[in-house]
Length: 303
Image (cartoon, rainbow, N blue to C red):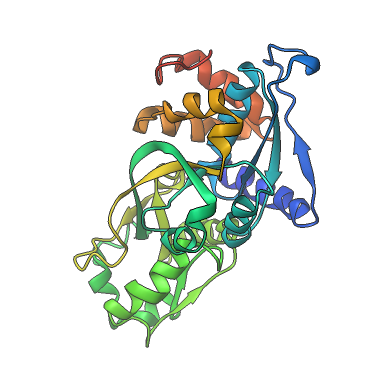
């Protein structure tokens, strides 16, 4: 069982708590190619460190936008609702990994007229319900019905404000008749992963909310449960979002961002390095390591 990623995520979650008090850190990537006086402007990225898709792309953009001549600031947040409200209000310029088509559709409905879609970068993202692969008799969400005692009546989830939480609680559980048997336990991504690891170490039964792409799917011996009712939603594309007017203020950055496309291999490698023990507390170093092996990940990438 690979525990290296969990250590990093817990550390990132702890760092994110500083953001709740308004802590913002400025990007100072060594790869910047312009002096301060030549800056094309400052772009602030708002993201949730515990959600490692956004964590990974935030540091990739810090590197790439810095090389284009922008100053980049990193604003760490802890709740999706705060993130979308801040983006719509212009508190920061970009959210570097949104799920606007399904998972975050409610936030988009609320703030759509104040948010600019800068383009999709990854196709096929999906929400899942998962169990350890040693649970050979549980292969579908349907199989959870009538078996709550095995799981202590709990489905282990992530942050209360996550789209995954709403989809699980408001759609999946009622659709499969699980809402009368199970409680969805919410806290944080790090807490969910800690519970998952503890249960797997003891080979005990556990059911968790997950998603793809996410490094945990490869790091843990787990399997997605089949969803014959489609209650966890359809696959969607991950997008870069900007505050309204982003492309007018930062046209070169917007054009560059719109061309970013990551396939499974490139994305998995980036997220794997960002969350690894080797680059714990050194996300910029992780990006540089990724660039060495993925310089052709997409057209225009600045190695």
